[in-house]
Image (cartoon, rainbow, N blue to C red):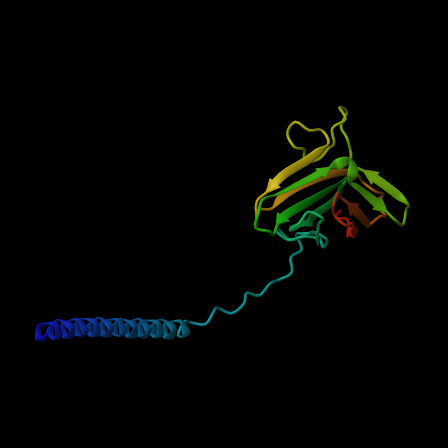
Length: 192
């Protein structure tokens, strides 16, 4: 019986000592975290903002690189469409549209160019996508197709397409762009 009590006392002592070491380790860990927090608070202040000056090299209607003229949600789930360029040059108007997947899964987006057009509401005219002499649309085409573009867009990865239309007369300064499965981009300013 005495031997059993000695063994039991030894086991309790070992258990007690092990718990004290765990508590001691937790205290060290907490102290280390507090030191890190103190260091983060003592970080230097950010530099003052840079002064931006007006640039005369770009036209007023041009969107800066990476930005857009107009943006809106589409009828494809989690896909946003942005018009990044809307430029008239000679007898054509080029529209560049960037699609961005804001979801968490890869999504299929398809644009059939026969369903894309410009609307001049003031002039009462509709301008369809231009075609070449072989009947192919003059636009970003999917390889092997004459009338469409499609892509499986990964999350966070933008895809840009371009479309050529007949240019409206020079006095038309804004026009509506309609692309499939997207509400109209109304009164987009034309970049000359």
